[in-house]
Structure formats: C-alpha cells, structure tokens
Length: 337
Image (cartoon, rainbow, N blue to C red; front, side, top):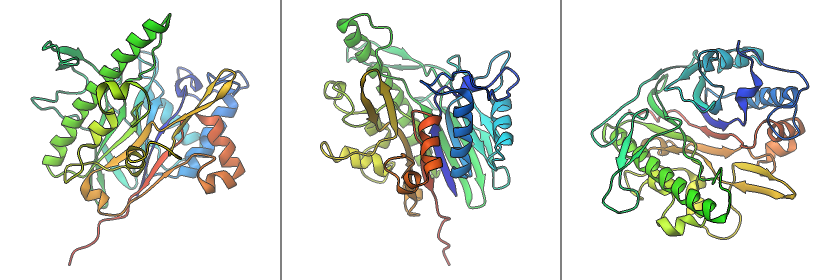
C-alpha cells in the first residue's frame, strides 16, 4: 500500500468556481510558471506516484461557491488517477484545505474526528500556558488536521493530515517586529504540536495503527528559536524514544545530525539569492506499522535517482510545487500461524 503526502503550492488558483482546471497560458501563482505548465506538471507527478492515498496539503478551498471535493474529483478524472475519491474534514478560511485523495477500489475513508478531556476537537480551541507565566492562552488551528478512519484489505488504519502553523514573520515591518512575530508563531506552532501529540497518545493507547503526515513547517535545527524553546515541534509529535514513539527516518536523521547533508522536502526561491531548502514534510508511523519495515522516499528531483533520471518527472516536480512528495510504501502485515 502506498500512502503519500504532498503540499501543492497555490493549488486553489488552478480551478474555477465550478471546479474545472484552468489550463491556459496565464500566469499561475507560482513564480514564472503558467497555469497550463503547473497543471500538466501536477498530472505527471500524481500519475507517477500512483498512490493508494495522497494527503493533499494546500488543497483547493471550500466556501459558498467552491468545493474541494468537486475540484479534486475533476482533477483526478482529468488525469485518470485511480486515487479519485476525495475526503475532507473541517473546512477553513485560508484557501488551503487538507484533503485525502484515495482509491475507492482498495480502501474506504471516513472523516472521524476525536476528542478527549485534554485534547479537544481540532476545530475548537486549546488552552495552554505558552510562556510559563501561569496564564492560559487560547490556541486554534487555522487549518484543522484531517482525521481519517481507513478501512483497507489489511485492516483498519488511522491517518491524521497536518498543516501546522507557519513560523514566518509575515507582516513584519522591521527587525524587532520580525523577531516578535517569529517568536509568537513558534510558540503557537509548538502548542499545536503538543495538542496533536495528545491525540497521538489517545490513538496509541487504543492500540490503533496510526500515520501522522503532512507539512509541519518545522524540523529539528531549522531555526534559531529552537534554542530558545528547547526542542522542535517535530520532536514533540514524534515523542520520546520508546514504545510510544512515532517514527520517520528523515526526522530521526535530522535529529541525530547537526552538520553534513540533510534530507529536504521543500525548495523555496528567494529573490537574487540561492534557493532555500528545508525538511518540512513528514510521514510518521506508529510502532506496529514500523515493525512491517515500510520504505520511505522523498521525491526530491535532485536527490532521488529515479526522479532525477526521468527528465519529464524531474521537470514536473520543479514546476508543480515548492514542496516534493513524501512517499510511504507499507507492506501488508506478516501472517501469524
């Protein structure tokens, strides 16, 4: 079974209000890429993935006029994808939804949000002391995680699709404001990860096989604020090493290495500067799934040999988004006699 997560930059702008793809030569919202180029590139990438399920981050929006489900179903039909059914959860107001594209012939999916006394529904609010001043602050998800109950031929599986708070100091007018906003955003991102980890603990206590995947806008050693707060949001969600830990090999590699080559899942263009690369996207699995010896791949066009040597796929990955897919190939459970 292949499960992937893919953040598609400005996916929403590639559809009209009827959910039809816009395939003309007007500029997309990606720098120096037309809508035709981006849509064609996305078709190449999704067909090459040939996944049973893809957690789409920054999926087209849902509102009074537009429908995430309608748009993604049209997209799947347009490129003849077997992952052609669409599941969404709590809608948001950011034009960036979280949605699951899946193959209805091999699995069934249901939005199944959970709550507990210390981890409420993800579309509600969470009270936490962020700065150790004994005052509780209210945290909300701008993009509530998508909680999925999957039924597959190999048994039930839980997915949680995540798009965590960005730490970028958007709107800052000077260095002092950038510092203040950056710290505030980091605190909120960490609080979201604490909230998410409590949900992870809830599923592990219930014995669920769990995959947490998506864009965390974070990674170990990614910025200077980590020294201020002690650890990254990724470390919080993964948990301490032991029976309750989630696992992602790229995250563990980054945690164990402060110098040298690092895996990366995103490549951002900066004006008149070299590209900035970062590890932001993850597929974390629970201990029972890790025991199946799954295989992880980041489809980075310059780091993944097959992607690099396939010129069509390489160029498509560069045109389609500023993030690259993270792919998990999960073998079936070993039969016990």
